[in-house]
Amino acid sequence: MTGLMAGKRGLIMGVANDHSIAWGIAKTLHEHGAELAFTYQGEALGRRVGPLAARLGSDSVFPCDVENLASVDALFAGLDERFGGELDFVVHAIGFSDKAQLKGRYVDVTTRENFSRTLTISCFSFTEIAQRAAKRMVNGGSLLTLTYGGSTRVMPNYNVMGVAKAALEASVRYLAADLGPAGIRVNALSAGPMRTLAGAGIADARLMFNHQKAHAPLRRTVTLEDVGGSALYLLSSLSGGVTGEIHFVDSGYNIISMPRPDVLQA
Ligand code: NAD
Image 1: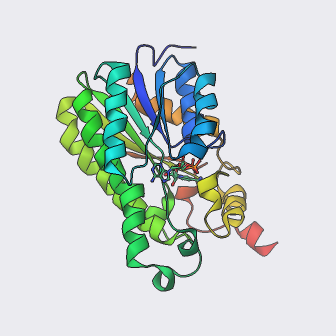
Image 2 (image 1 turned 180 degrees about the vertical axis):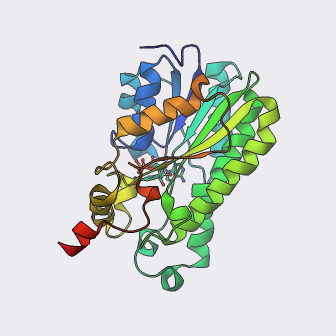
């Protein structure tokens, strides 16, 4: 343990189980000395998140459904009791869209209702959390969200989630500009495809996973430890001069413009 996060108190949002990206990040931050609070969405997930938090020495576990603003405010009231009104970092690893619309052509399947819901949960919630967290980051801080390369390039079936991630990445830049003078940094990790609950909701997820493995420069998909390490960098003083960044953790897949000819011809 290097203690890079020693004395830092932070909020982890988005653990559903031990495959969640938020869980991978939490483990790494804990190894480096951070004190963590967790949220869960709904009682069923709460029964899983409580024991996971306990494994990292935390009993600060709060319900929070970001669609419900009262529940967001209740979360921060609870956090204030635990952390005395101060906070050093937040990990926002939350995304949702109707599974039925993560399949087929964007132009055909997308409805107004699900578009709004997807953007509210997967994008605007980050701004609502940032508004509340920033008030408590009296000594500066770091906010981190999770995005995917489907924001800037078309991935089959990613559809409205791609639109939400594009808006989320723009939010990162606007929030970074607004909060920078207070010493608060705002960044996103753009992870390659991972086998999680949310990842499994996208049609042909296995195909995307295998495509990345075959064509990414590192010839593999990324692990929870990969994402945890990059999150540690962005949340700690190691990245003290970095804000407004979209940092890829995708085995280099984003630099590729054409699949490998040897694989295509095989
Ligand atoms: P996951 O299913 O483990 O986590 C998604 C989390 O979002 C869950 O904990 C769920 O409870 C939470 N959530 C959904 N709606 C919510 C709401 N209304 N209120 C509060 N929480 C809510 O999957 P994951 O892959 O770890 O997803 C975490 C983040 O990483 C998401 O933003 C996802 O888009 C992003 N991401 C995932 C991948 C991938 O391939 N899995 C790649 C890049 C980015």
